[in-house]
Amino acid sequence: MRQKYDKYDKRNHQIPFGEKLQAASIDSGRMAYLLRFSQLAPPACQARPQRGFSRQAESSTSQHGRHCFCCIVLGFALLHGRRLFRHPYKKLSNMKNRAFALPRLAALMTGAVLALTALGAHAQNTPIKFQLDWRFEGPSALFLTPVAKGYFKANKLDVTVDAGNGSGGAVTRVASGTYDMGFADLASVMEFHANNPDAPNKPVAVMMVYNNTPASVMALKKSGIKTPADLNGKKMGAPVFDAGRRAFPVFAKANKVTGFQWVSMDPPLRETMLARGEVDAITGFTFTSLLNLEARGVKAEDVVVLPYADFGVKHYGNVVIASPKLIKEHPEAIKAFLQAFTKGVKDVVADPAAAIEFVKARDGIINVPLEVRRLRLAIDTVVNSPDARAEGFGQVKAPRLTLMASQVSDAFGTKTRVDPAVVWNGSFLPTAAELNVLPVPKK
Image (cartoon, helix red, strand yellow):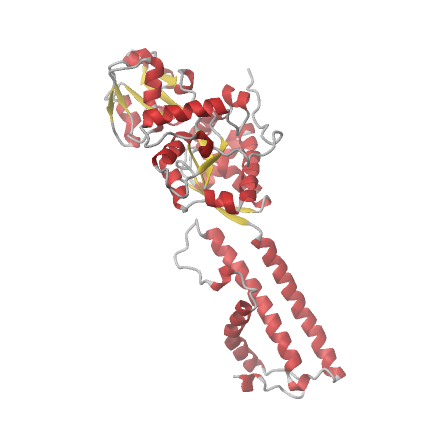
């Protein structure tokens, strides 16, 4: 091939067009070798993209494409420039040939420099896979808004947000390394720590989002249940993994509720069984179960809601969690994530209706008015609650955290006691000025 490539047309010092194409095709292998040898090619370019394109892989795949394009430009410049000066018909002592070669080489090397610059700028972005606790519903706007508005990109982060199927699943997936960060109930994080003391990758809470647990007991007014004392001897319904059910022993102890019995069911049947009278009361997140009951024909004024936070259970709710690996290797990325997320929260609290459009972009079949109500209810009850305004968005108070850790250890019957010092790390939080995102509700 070298002999064929070196066949220059002596009259115009050009490679014949057909042979140039042949040479370019064959030299693609040499180019990859040269780039790898000189360590200019990023790791993404040395691996062939996998088949089966998923939405989760979209960011990494497009990144691979940009890397490869830059490497092709750079490799072509290096190889072709080298040949311009090596060829016997292009001796630099010949002024005519020098005038021909140098501008061409300069143009090629300029392209190579621009390619490297673009590659370096993109390589600065840190990819973060984020796992939600539940489906794309109203509250997920808190995370989808900073993605859609480019706040994460502005902080040099490539963030992908995926729907979840419960806090326990989010904790497990971050612990396994499948996801870098997630959104989960703090009680689930505590339980994982206490039941897996030797696990090498226990997720850590880095920001408080739901200052109060969204859990509550709900019953129909016609049942006669008005206060926690009315739950004595009643039939309670909830999935076995429901956060409210798991923490109900704390609620029961605080309110002296005894003699109740549990009926288990899948999540979609919980509100249906209450509406049919098959159970006396249910536990669940207020902004989930209350609106689900309405969707089943039950009017909001016919439902009694007993929020845990109002009846002696001062547990924290959902938190942003991060893997120890990310904390160790990219602490600056966690700070950047929380700063961009906080900026997004401020926008969502200011205009929930607009934020729901970003949820609809991820799940086109959602009921927009319903999800706007769900988001507003979540903001009013757990994000911008009186406790949240007193403690400050994103933050926790040590005495309250310690009490919760002790209560979770008892209620969940964990293998070891929960150590609040290893569950929470607030060193990545934004500044006090940036965390000032909660307005005083209008009276």
